[in-house]
Length: 370
Ligand SMILES: [Zn+2]
Ligand SMILES: [Zn+2]
Ligand SMILES: [Zn+2]
Ligand SMILES: [Zn+2]
Image (cartoon, rainbow, N blue to C red; front, side):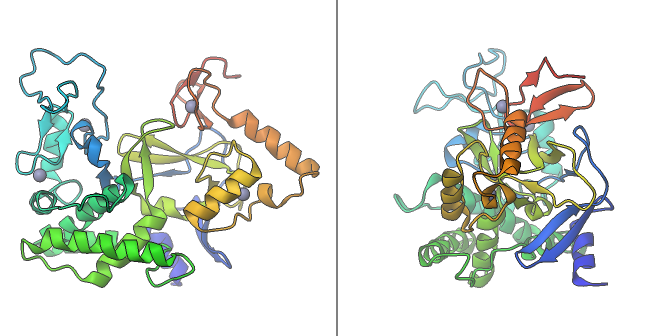
């Protein structure tokens, strides 16, 4: 078996998707013609996740449901805790009673988490989160979320006792190890990036040290570098992200400003769905940014935030090209049509309702043509 065959198996790509390797790295190709309404990829739960620090009491870690701050809380529920500070912000009804750093929307979600310590939350994470000391004015909220996500990852390693668990985790670690973003790669990371990763790694290691669990510096830095290049935002809407999560198999869908697929979040799971018909052997792409921007805007966001110069068809074609005009029209056609919100989503098809809906704001288009 070649390396690619092994990776194809490691990420469970199946028959419909093929992992390939080219001059710009690995990418995935469509093997069976797909139409809107089909599914390209369906994820497992994320390997690790982190909730934005200021949203911790409001987001269920099992289903990623957010507590609706505007809804009236059930007066019969005695478990509802209210934040003393603000008085108005209510938190989710159930929390981990070991650490008070993890919240659930229902008993069902809490029980699921308790039964799956290697998937969601365990005693080691309780200890590490309780001991997590974030120095003031050093990290952004995004970076603190990344730190929490790595604590989630390493707490599983710290927790395992049985060999079967070790095998399960080894498989997950391997999935991260083969992603792009080597810590030593100075093309992928600026000097400032690397300095910041070192700072973050230090905080993560220290949160475990108190409990005599020694993490290797190199391992933590390597995992942080991978996660920076490959983690996904868990988005509440166009403006607000609830946190971050890693779905390694989705990381091989490279960026294009003229994508043929998009990612849809369903609770803790994600699906990659086609936004237009996709031919056999076509490369599968998603867009990392809003495609409804000028070429100049897209290029600078990608260079700054993702460290690459976009080489997609839409960026390479001359502005006078007729093909480019066609592409621009196709894109306008599949953008979210919800007039009530500013949304950068795409319309995808729900085969059960026969209605198109937005992958982001989940708005249903009642005028979907048959
Ligand atoms: Zn839940
Ligand atoms: Zn806990
Ligand atoms: Zn582009
Ligand atoms: Zn939308």
